[in-house]
Length: 83
Image 1: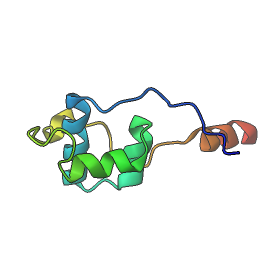
Image 2: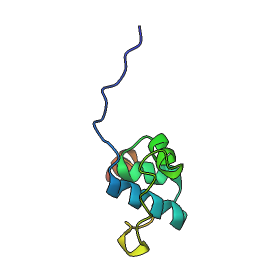
Image 3: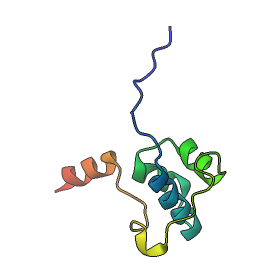
């Protein structure tokens, strides 16, 4: 018997798609983008391939979050253990 995890409830919005496209255009790694949003990397690929929100243009560089990599919960936990 397979037990699946509960869905996260996170969905890609139009604004997310613009940010994702801007981050891809800037050269961010797909797994860093996925970590930033808390999405599965497949959602980033769907935005990149225009399967989600095909009409949405990339956000401008001034509107993008800082470039990753982003601290994961594990990295933050390890950081706190060392202090």
